[in-house]
Image (tube, rainbow, N blue to C red; front, side):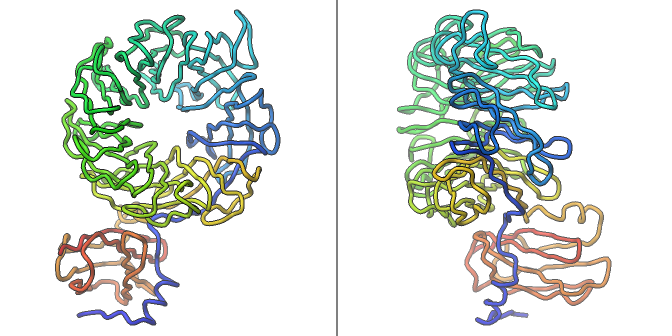
Length: 536
């Protein structure tokens, strides 16, 4: 049977149908009269822990030591602040990452410029070597400091990422411009600097990786063989950098064994600038990294213009399996990548674009940005994308997944006049606030209901060319149930009423455009979303 959409029916569906792969449940803004931004989020007992940076000492911020401080916030399950604490000295102390420790506490890392006299403190900062240091703060579950450590030399040292190890210690990566203090083996300019510490913050070893130009590491993960792999970028073609260099800067991925020797390394890129921001392992034993790219040659194909998010899947020896560019004609940046359900991945960051892969940007100009969250398949196919923001600049820094399609997003918002998606109390007009959002990925809801056999649903053929069939079976009588079809932009294009407990609906799709489509069923407590592909 062929269904025909009338103008009236389409208007009705736009009002009542399902319209977004990602919906906002609630949101909170946190801050004072100066700038704040959020960097990490963890789910903790009866709430969330937010690792932020703050320049304020008013509004919701109490106890700032001067300039930027680490700002740690404990909220309840709806984002209300239960307690907050500032950590720092009288200069800039800039947060990067927070992770959970095996003893139930948390480790905070970032960069400290707060100078200290020998044997003395500057606020909470002790033992700064000069310039800026890696600064780690270990706190218990209530935010009370257990220990702090500075690592570095007299130059600029900046940690970006860290990971726990099997013996309750930690690996920290970033960049170092020092040649003294704790830092040895610098090859020139900035090197990747890896520091291995025990659970009390005592250095077990440190090592510099690089060449005569600049390098940095933005992400590190432990590997099953006791080693580790890091990624970032390099501008060198000498020293430790022994790979096929493409031009300007390349993404640099290095695999080390358990005693810190390089097992393999790869340079990825084109003739312009590339740099990786995050890497994770894949179920197949390889890796997938997210980077920025300005190129459209060499290893890079499909750039949309400006700077794109570049996602590359590699095998266990670093050979490229596939690569994809995501973005539009302006700047697009990916800050993290995470595993999601059924082999998919979530990538978050920001976008200045509103074309190409990007739609729905709220910014008033291409000089401003929205949070940008995208979902891709295990083969790099774009499943959905969502711009989240207001008229000014927003950026997404971290994501915490919760059961049944729920997620928490954290970053910063500059929008203070409650436009677009920004609908919270801003604390300093013209400044940035920490922005926390509870959202639902509607393509993931209802998984538990399906596992409990509350109903069954099949779609075939998939991919399809001329028609697609939906076969369904509910365990009880149904009332006011529909199958709603929408495209990748969230626009509803059709809706079918479901009038029986069991049935088959066949839809003629010969007149719709080729591409990816979603279907959504909402029946009492059951919500189910899936997808199918229309071929030419």
